[in-house]
Amino acid sequence: MKSDVDTYDYVIVGAGSAGCILANRLSSCGKFSVCVLEAGPKDWHPMLYIPAGFIKTLVNPSFNWMYSSEPSAGTNGRPIPAPRGKVLGGSSSINGMGFNRGQKMDFDVWAQKGNPGWSYDDILPYFRRFETYKSHDDQSYRGSKGEMTITDLDWIDPLCEAYIKGAESMGIPRNADYNGKTQEGISYLQRTVRGRFRMSAARAFLNPAKKRSNLRVITNAHVTRITFDGSCATGICYKLGGSNGTERRIQAGKELILAAGAIGSPHLLQISGVGAADHLSKIGCDVRHNLPAVGANLQDHYATRLTYRVHGADTINNRARGLPLFTEIVKYCFGKKSILQLGPTAIFCFLKSNESLTDPDIQINFTPGTHQHGMQSTLEKQAGFTLATWQHRPESFGYVRAKSPNPFQHPEIQPNYLAAETDRRVILSAIKICRRLAQTDALRPFVSEETFPGAACQTDDELLNSAREIGQSIYHLMGTCRMGRREDQSSVVDEKLRVHGIKNLRVIDASIMPTMVSANLNAAAMMIAEKGADMVLGKST
Image (cartoon, rainbow, N blue to C red):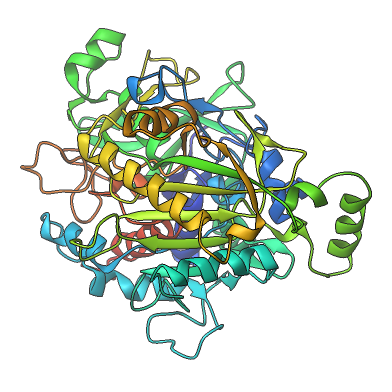
């Protein structure tokens, strides 16, 4: 009699940046059957491919989980949107496409915290393996044969050049490759774009693997719980098409791998009975395994921004309406330079908040455009530019907690932005540096006025309040299934990404990061998956 439970060697929950690489690598030899489940749909919509389409997909519930953090003192009581991709490719299908690995010291700290095999020298080959980047002569740090194409933004205009020249006049060097030997400096951003189109993890890794007979991809599949046999994970249950769907089961013959991200992975563990026993009992979940760190140690990059009205220069604001927009669309369709090629930023700047530091601790993103206050998907009518800035390595910690056993109820998300005094001090320094950049001799001729926080905002308290008033997540949530030694009570997985106390279960995504990296997280998440796949297959120690 045929069983109604399908069995695969490896079952992967989540087809995001990590899940797509895992699906590709684990199915590549043909020996193992692999199933990857994605809660969202196929990546069919044109806005998922046009770089500027992020402005629509970031607020589209068809492709976004539409999570939101809880109000806090650090945000003046505001809930903060926390977009997460809910589509093949995950957040790599809706993010800003910036490609930034981080600093050497970020990963050396991981190893120093009891995670052998995760130092910069250990993980550099994995960064190189999945990428193709050919813009510069020095390839000792870069890959040239990977599936993920990384390109330099080809958008040179007078306002951007004035900003870079102004930064150089302040002693900030132009950096030809911030993903190379050193990160510090200013540069047009590198991004996951090939030709005119976004390179999501689905496009780079999943699409080429779909033709393999040993790989199955299930979309619109909401995983509802992990199944167990004692302390061994045996598979998952899921529903197709929402909460009213029929529950189905899939068995994992070898391993179950969670790649659902910093919100999805801890939430699934918790509603399956793996987490802090007191919290699980409180919300009505049966306790399978007491693992208090599940969902703890949440961190994120919290950015404030300064906006300026400009004259004597065209910006995205001018070009994104009426006849100019039609012209930009035509140019894009014919392969010419167009604002449709742009993401949310054009230039990355990495620098130190004070000269006593050995490594940059803040990032400033320059965008030749502005959006309406509180409406990130709506541009202002007047020409302007934006400086968005944040602290690389925040010291504030929060949590992700299930609210009930219901897998369709969003968890409680509390990053505790700006709770640590260091975070408040660094963001103040960053705001002041942004103001200096806007007043350099090169950029000043274009500036009409500072529209936010505005010239009247001068004291430290006023500047800090402006950050609380307008700051937003940069969508870099991590740390909720932290990697560390078994005896480390703040950890969830070991250095091989195996969940403490549970057999045949790994977490392989940004949630395992022990500490925040000085970067956008997409690159590091893909590196984790690349290394994690080797660990699953026994190719890496």
